[in-house]
Image (cartoon, rainbow, N blue to C red; front, side, top):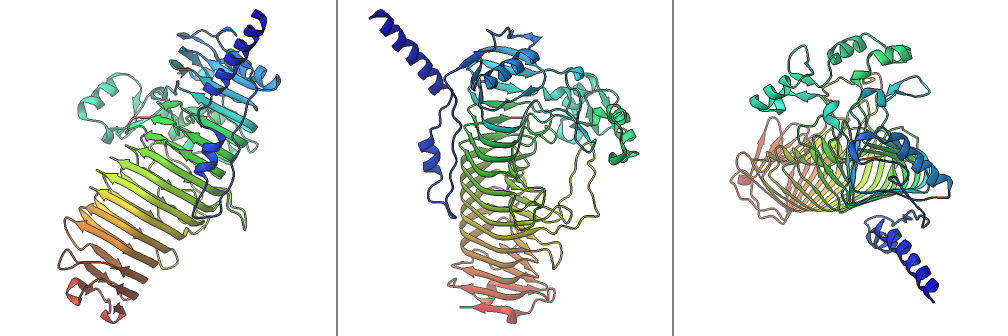
Length: 541
């Protein structure tokens, strides 16, 4: 009898452990993927056997001094080879070098657990691609995996201040002086601080090199120009990231690429606003993704969609659902680009709040990395205290990296944003309501609908060289200037608009055509034509 009770108790303990390691259920995932504005799809959550490997039992020491790299990686490999299970990181500060994930493994950080990545360069041997190009190893990486997860209530600290440059413009005078006094070195123009001496020399040396010709010895000489991503997993089937907090990233915090079946639930990214290139959640060329109830505060784009590696007739990024997320500081709340050359299709964003971001909804690309972006649906967005625009399309985007990145200017891949839909968008406080700007007549934002919007901003809604734009029940309340400035647009329509200022709409450009206003009660007094715009293009009903 006692043995039977003991067996039941052991079974309950294992069951509880298996459940506690993962909070979101398959039913919840299924429910979140219903009633989409495009054809629904399925995501299968990874499952793991009731088998655990506690890293402390494997010899790990969580006092913040001992390096546990080999122990953590061995536990992950042993777990995978045994058929899978959960590698448990208990409460403590576990210093480590790069961690490599394996199939059928859930790396679970219990409450109080901190994985702290080493600040010693010798712990990060360079990775070399088949072409010979080098990169710093990501802090947590994996490729060609099946059923993998990182879960729990613990913290992953990337120790990024050991590697990350800082721009002077982003610090107060007192903060800048303290930073310079702490060590490191300044750039030649004294506008950027580098945490490691020799970085400027490495930058100068690399400028004179052609990457395709660089040897391993050359790359070692310029390794200070490189930084690690925090979490970088690719070519994987069925992945879950849940509950964890990622902070202090050396570079991009999450770069998840070529994953089919990805769920990110209750993930927190906590980086300071001045962290250089510290994107929050980057989803690149993935398919079938649910990003749900996540929070981001960071120094670059918040939630960002990327798609590279053009394949004719295919979309490298497709079927993406983002719900109930919050973005605070960041260059953009929800972002598409700048890499769009792989194409994007079927993206749904619902119930997003953005506070204190530079831009709320940001779309960017240029003629070297453009591609088709279509079937994007964004609804129920709430934005407050933005620095720039509530909505921004930039088809001539240029990077402003502290360490320059080589761009192949010989490529011509035109951006093509065609078929985007915005509904129930509200903003209280921004520099501009929206900017829709094509670079030239061949690079336009096309076929975009805006419905049910109230934007209280310092300047209004600006559209240049855009076509097929429809606004219904849209109110823009600027502090200065016209509510709408249209220049060289075509097939632009308003429905149910009402003037709150004498000059609600200003129309410019001889190429403006087919401007329609319906059910709005506006008169010619509310519309100003200038710079060659012909009043005859206006149809008021």
